[in-house]
Length: 185
Image 1 (cartoon, one colour):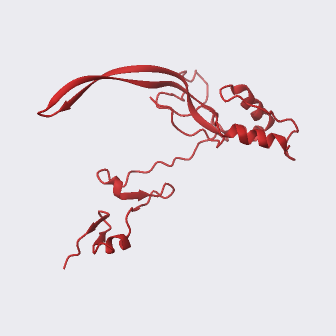
Image 2 (cartoon, rainbow, N blue to C red; image 1 turned 60 degrees about the vertical axis):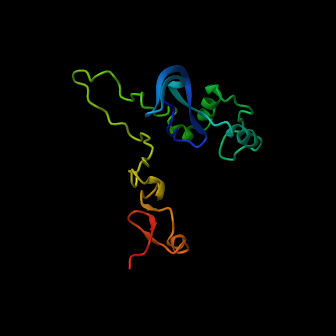
Image 3 (cartoon, rainbow, N blue to C red; image 1 turned 90 degrees about the vertical axis):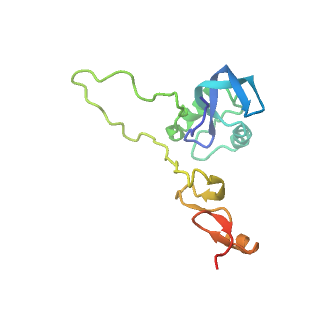
């Protein structure tokens, strides 16, 4: 598992909190030539968390010199990247920014409670619950994805190469395959 995903706030990034090492035996085979076993180590993430970005610290120090008119006059001057306490104090100073998720989504994480509903308990709907927008698009073409460019907002696929690029080589752009081909006559 690798830490990845969105934290819901531009000032935060998904970082590993707990890691462990995995060593695997990998068989490297070259048909009709050779084969041998290699040992490779991989760093796996077992727990992830949203923490302030490294480049945000400098911006926060500059921002701390100028108090905001709509906020309190005290702003922490220095924040440690791996200490969550200063960020929590920021969330207490500006609670409207606390809507962001502080735990980043991972494949191993289970967000649902393990406890079931007891007898007579109703399932309550949480109002104002933050759900990050899903920008996952289906790939344009599995075999030829290097020939396509995809717009992440509309999920629309378009050719990486332009018609003018193909014409400069006396070819025509086939928009279905996104390849420059010889013109048919």
